[in-house]
Length: 364
Image (cartoon, rainbow, N blue to C red; front, side, top):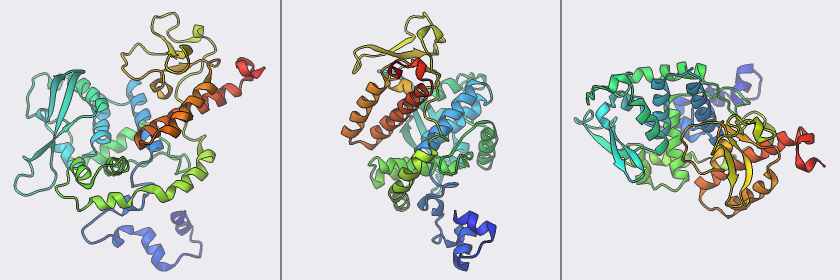
């Protein structure tokens, strides 16, 4: 709002405030560049949960439709999951991705090169287990022909550090994203925003200063206090106030409503029907629209999947009550965020069902 105020030339802003809005970097503490992080800058700071979901969903959809290459898909997922700096991306080699057999299948360990340090800057690496989503992406990526020779010193990504931002801009000219807090505009995406998001989320979920520093590949905890200062607790009342008004902009439900199982993409196929045995005594909720192998927790994980085809006649009000009870009882922030997203999906499904009351069982 202040930026728009200044750009229109309207009176009322002090000269020093105008200078701050135009060039905030001049107000940084000497040697540190964390203003965008601490101020929760909507264009350069950490992403919100809604923005990160929009990025992930849009990226996966564009990749599935062939609009984004597997190289770019993997590069963006690497940034999302690790928050590494562009220079670290450029230094990654094939040998820095270690694949082993674990009790639940193949596991991926990353050797992340450090970006700062003395003498050993190009040699020092910290070991980190890859999150499961990134592991699946990397396993698929490493099947490309250029890795067939098994040359360990080959670059993992053929990109220089100064080219990462340009790659992101090119990718997200194709990938459609939307930001609630920017009024439905596309999300401005820069490499460091993924880093800010990873560090902030880790601290929100209880990471200590040392754990956060290690995650961000910092050699000391000196910079972690900036991440703590950025926690958006004070912005929550604003988010709560505008959330219902902005909800139409960024939809959590990405699937396709169906009236009967005969309308399902995989009608008649074994395993296509999705039921809830945990709380709804096996009642049908819908169908799965893909044959892809999936190990997610059905039916809850299905709610946020683009391939989910929910039945209009399913007991959505009953499931909504179960989810709300779980949300009230849950104390861990990470699980609360997941449950809230599932609640948002069910609310949108109910709203769509209500828009065509003649097909819903509660219309009578």
